Image 1 (tube, one colour):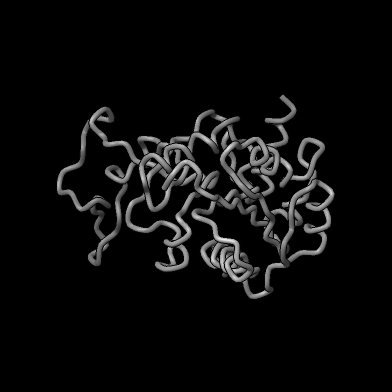
Image 2 (cartoon, one colour; image 1 turned 30 degrees about the vertical axis):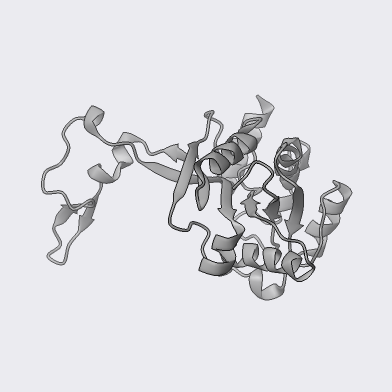
Length: 233
């Protein structure tokens, strides 16, 4: 993929949130939640187009007041508790493809992880392009106590086994290989991988480690309270 790659950014925001009712447009620190993600997307030098994918009229109305493009209303069957991000991305890419607009890659930016470090999107895109990955995700390091080499699973005899399948446990924290979890901040995927392989990841997935200690994935009221306290500081 070349530097002039045409990249579509999608901010997914469906209605019907149960953990935090109306969270995508709920005011956080005085502005709707999805505005945080929109502002960081607008700072990017590499994103060619930033859109909202939503089924909810109220979310769409708020998005338009913020200047966020809403080219379509997401179909109801793609806005249930069982709908996945892959189907949402496929729908958006197919919508534009049918109108003759082709994107080389897509960047999924979830509004529920609002506190991205300035420039992090472009840093991720630059690595994505230079590495010629099928996809790239933002991650954070798993704390040692949750490292898979120190995690156990129960077998059929109700005995504990190391989750990685090793017979001997790694004794020292310093010897543990680094492990990561997706933090939900940035997902980048080649459009052909999405449309042809029906995957958000493909075979070659790169990663960037998110900076800062201000990580939150807003799913519960407790998460929201933490975010409010972070902003107030």
